[in-house]
Amino acid sequence: MTEPLGANTCWGELPALYAAYHDSEWGIPCHDDGELFERLMLEGFQAGLSWSTILNKRENFRRAFDNWDPLCVAAYGPADMARLLADPGIVRNRLKCEGATKNARAFLAARDEHGTFDRYIWSFVGGAPLVRPVPVTREDVPATTPESEAMSKALKKRGFTFVGSTICYAFMQSVGMVNDHLANCPARRDSS
Image (cartoon, rainbow, N blue to C red):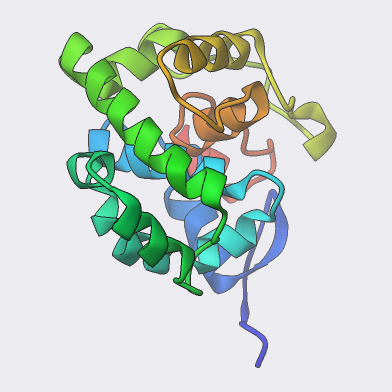
């Protein structure tokens, strides 16, 4: 059975789950440490896959990764890795699963150093969403920016993995560090 399509967005006609994500999360500033951790992890798991694959497995990821509690994920050991790699509801990639544990440890260290991960990660855009020319077409939206390059380098230096510049820019879009909704998109008007 095909999922019904949602509203026409700057990404075109979308399945309802995807449209809801586009309309209610993507591009809206997020400052909650737990949500920031989840979205950074999901962007890493998406590498090489479609976002719809990850979005359709999002609830399974939450279940499998203890609702993305970084304290729990940081403590994962061999039994947890075996459990994750046997779970058909998530992306069963050993490097990505092990990376989530490394990333949880790096996330906690950054949070402890800066008081919140939010304060740290938003420092790459000066604490407020980047002001860029409003994109008219999808071709106007970059894959990387100097800010995503800087974020990627800094996160890698801290021990994060699956945080290349393209992943960092997708994360920045997701958490509203930049608003890349197209000019004619209703979500842009709603978020302006």
